[in-house]
Length: 86
Image (cartoon, rainbow, N blue to C red; front, side, top):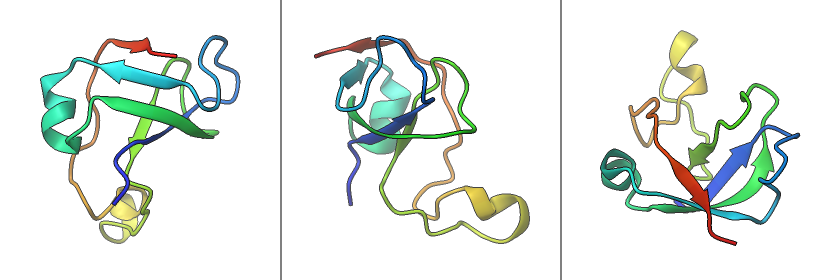
């Protein structure tokens, strides 16, 4: 299961498709098993500077409000600093 892909808002300035970002968040490391993410997609519902780290599998956690959450985790969000590696 891919734990390296991320999505950003379409217009992000320095963040671009293919860029690798790294976070030093212990919480993100614990949940996803990764600190580095490659920008591979864009998301219309994302905010400026928001990075959506995902597994590549969008099987929903459940119906209703849970439809937009992946089944693989109940983790929702974390605030963390990140840097562009390349």
